[in-house]
Structures are given as C-alpha cells and as structure tokens.
Length: 295
Image 1 (spheres, rainbow, N blue to C red):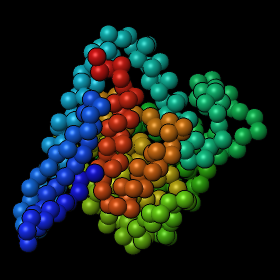
Image 2 (image 1 turned 90 degrees about the vertical axis):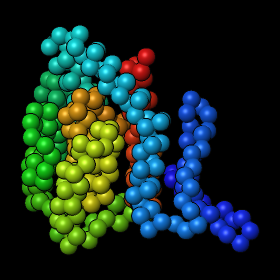
Image 3 (image 1 turned 90 degrees about the horizontal axis):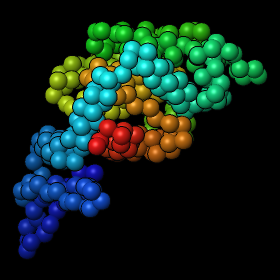
C-alpha cells in the first residue's frame, strides 16, 4: 500500500511516498521524496509511483505468462482448445455461481452444461442461472466490439431473465447493501452517471494501462458502483475475463474456496478507496494460478 510519511528534522517536516513489497521473498521498500508539503496533485504522483512499482514487480511476470500461454495454445489442435475452454467455462460457471450462493456442485454443473443432465432436488433458479452464465461466457468470447453499457445490460438480461425478469438488464432504482460488508454502494441517483464515467475512463485508459491491471480495475470499479439489484459480482468477473481474453491473456477463475481473501481485498479497496489493494490481490492470484507459464 502506498502511504505518505512525514519525517521531522529539526522544526521542518519532509514528506515521502513509501511502499513496501516483496520480490523473490525479500521485502523491498521504495520511496519518493515529495517536499516540505504534500503536493496538490498527489493522486497523480501516487499513480505514477505505483506504476513504477508494478513495472518492477509484476508486469514482466504477467507478460511472460501471456507469451508462454500463446506459445502453448499455438501447439494445440482445435479440438484440444475447445475442450480446455469448456473445462474452464464449467469451473468458472461453478465458482462464480457458488460465490453468489448457488447450491450446485462442480459435478452437477459439469453434468448440466456438458450432458444436459438436470440435478435433482436443486433449486430451479440455480440450474437456469448456471445455463445462462455458460451462454454469456461464450457470447463474451465471440463479442468483437469493445465494452460498453449496452452489452453489459444485454449480458445481465441474459443471466437473470429466466429467473428474475423484473430486474434483468435493468439499472437499479433502489439502494442496495452488501451482506457482511462495511462498504455501502452509491445511491441509486448516482449510478447512471457513475457508469457513464466508468466507461469514459475505460475508453481513455484501455491503451495505457497493462491489460491485467485494466481487467482488475474494471472488475473493482464496476462492482463498487453495484449497478444492479443482483448479479453485480458475476458481471464484474465476466468483464474482467473479457478484457483478459481480448488482450491475449489466459482468463482468471476465482475459486469459491478463495472467496474470503477475494471479499476482503474488495472491501478494503472500497472502504479505503485504494484500488491497489485489489489490483495487487489479483496480480498475486493470477501469477500463482499460472505458474506453469513462468518457466
């Protein structure tokens, strides 16, 4: 986490930006001298400072993953790639739905999506939303244009129209709360304006920010706005994978078993308004998940 530190020498206080992080198991500290007072453009300075740290610690590892991933898939047959994609889709659908309360097991999800075998004694809602999520996943992969509000509304409609048609594809007009979280999403009157600002930010920055960082930030910013009554987490994870896939990076699944760390990173980033908390969590988990592409 980037912090402003003041150090007193005599009667004068000198200010620094400071960030401690690990490289190869060793704690490294990076500092930037600010002066005798905190500059008015401190937010811009923080972003530049953080980018330099990301360059040093994360970007080379992420780019190596992309390079080796592309090399790996170039050797695979079409059938092999389709099978690998199907396996990812099933796990992604299972975990993203499970995080939101689905009762389906991984095996039940696989039987449903691969063999059209409907599990017995399970809520119809869980079954329909798993089927809808798998359709959205493939739509997302085939979508050739870039992200915008209309396609998000379309995917959200696809996700919930079979179970909750009254809210499917509709921006919320009521206040919502996140169970168990200290963070309170924006008021309904702010949501549409915030969404316009979000996609404006995306259009301005999509060619400037590293793709894995961009995907992490879109996930965080979208779920922080929380534009829907339900389905915000699932849509934010779809957006994240759309960006990763679009830029040639392997997609990321967040396992249900890792949900506590995931929730904590989101909440800390939202409450403290420090995006790097969540971005760093994604970086760590992405690199851990794709160790096989780092040799």
